[in-house]
Amino acid sequence: MVGSLCENNDKFAIDRPLPETEVGDYIAIHDTGAHGFAMGFNYNGKLRSAELLMRPDGSVTQIRRPETVDDLFATLDFEGVRDFAHAESTNRSAR
Image (cartoon, rainbow, N blue to C red; front, side):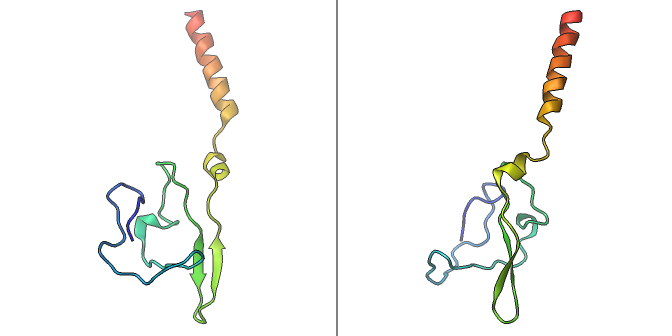
């Protein structure tokens, strides 16, 4: 299982045989460190995935939904940026 994670060279496994999978199957990777939601950071624009909890009886419950593009931009203050740009242009013309 290799793919683009946080950095281009990050890999969870190399040359590890896995059973056949189909759409809807789950693959559990324990102890993902910085690639999990808790330590993850999306400086590179990659949205964090959902988190699932597997219970002792084998059932699976989603405990955190996947991030959306709206989540990525939710804390940006676009009005503040516009006000800042306006103030900067006013300061430059006053000089």
